[in-house]
Image (cartoon, rainbow, N blue to C red; front, side, top):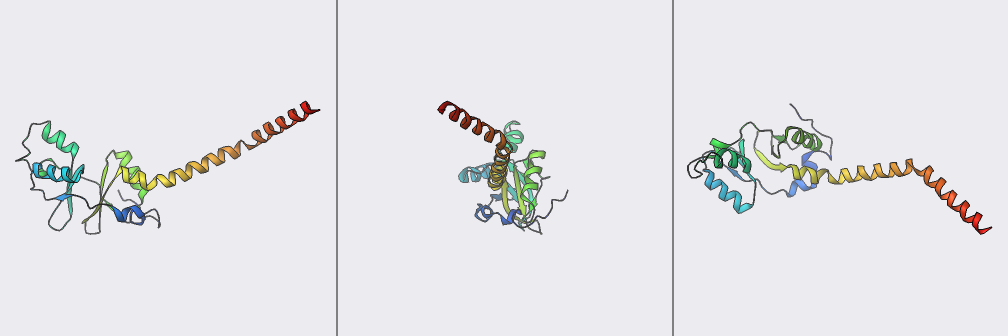
Length: 175
């Protein structure tokens, strides 16, 4: 499935927040889970991206992978390596992809982390659903404001009639 290249302003790379993203945590596939978890803990990250020597993404290991594929199976984090528990069939975005397209895809396909890669498949950033929500929040608030205005204007004739009725009642009482 191809994600559309977006017009300026709605592309991932055009978001002002994108430039300030922290570098993703990466490791090689032969890193032990114990070493990876210590790195995740020290940075307070919920995942680690598996890359090869060229920086190309090979997979991802999330807290969920560690819980389900290691802890739940009573495996030893000192001997199990990341390639044994990584998710290798992952979706990856390009910087020129549309923010809203990926928000929809992540929501529909129920995954929370999205590596952003260059044309060679090298990791550039890692976005989360939270990032996409913060990227789209101002747009959503603007749309909500527009809908509220439309709703109020749609009811304006009732407000005018009610206001006139109050004025007529006040005038009638004053006479």
